[in-house]
Image (cartoon, rainbow, N blue to C red; front, side, top):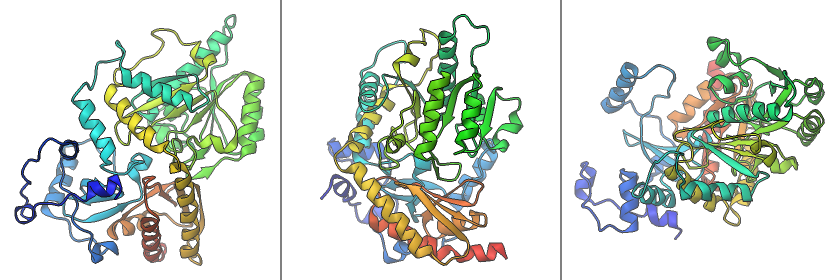
Length: 466
């Protein structure tokens, strides 16, 4: 029995449990501490009905109450799916009405080890009992240890910690401009502009959103940071022409685009950007917030191309849901940054960093990344087989467990139908791509179930297109 199976084998007390009572407190063993951290009952046994994803029942009064309060008290920035989640185990989520869902979204590529991983929960419980926050005025061991781990397995020489992916990209913007000022000490007009690409997504703060190609993210808040030029993703000649202008501080590119529609760069494109940046003195920044840290079957997505950046930004899966962001840089970049040039209150806190160490150690276990790659390839083949012949399916693409299904119609109706059938999927691109980014621990059986549900839900696209 694996540690996860052992953890899931905790059984509820029989009679009072079903009526909503909590079990009696157990001795304070490691498992008890983990259960306290979870603060949720173990899932009900999976029934034959839930395994095939029955039609979604009507929302309960409890679900409707939460949705009504959300509409009353929260700023309306999210168009949420009509489900209220209460807890999760592994690759499954459970709503307040007791329904089970297979999570093919992982909180938008965040929960790499799934929900309620016992080692992650034990780390959170233990570290929160020691120290959660002191700020970067002081040293803490977890931050230094995590930086050491990340540097030792990457191109980088140093790390800077933030709290999110967009904060990591904001830091990369500032570091790039400061680097150019130091590199051109006698110039009143050093390179300060940026190159980004179509279908890019780098975040929603004012600098990062300026690098994000979708106009609906930028225009309501114009003017955003000036000095950003976009060219088509993959158009090396257009990129080189702009880089050679001598005005570019840095080029921001995702080796594999997630939000933009699951598009993978070519080796020629990234290598060409590397060479053009070297010739012009510009920095090359890889945004691996979504595609990095094991998602593609490589620790870093750019490893598949044999091209190294000067700066890399990371975030989503690092601490399995505890907010964290990282900027990894080469020494030449770090050397341009002085005390006070940048900072953060919460970045690199001991709770987030210690949790990230636990996630890092599990992902780095022998065979883990090879399994991600294998499962991803098998899943793509499975989808191509099961969805073949459907006129709405244009392409199945991706790398590792970052997979997209491009449709010739909006994907929304299919996403909703899959949710009704108990499988959570996302959209990407122009709304016509189904994005599949499950926890990296997902089983082949769960992937097959997801493919079956997607296939069975495809007819809703005929209705939507009619």
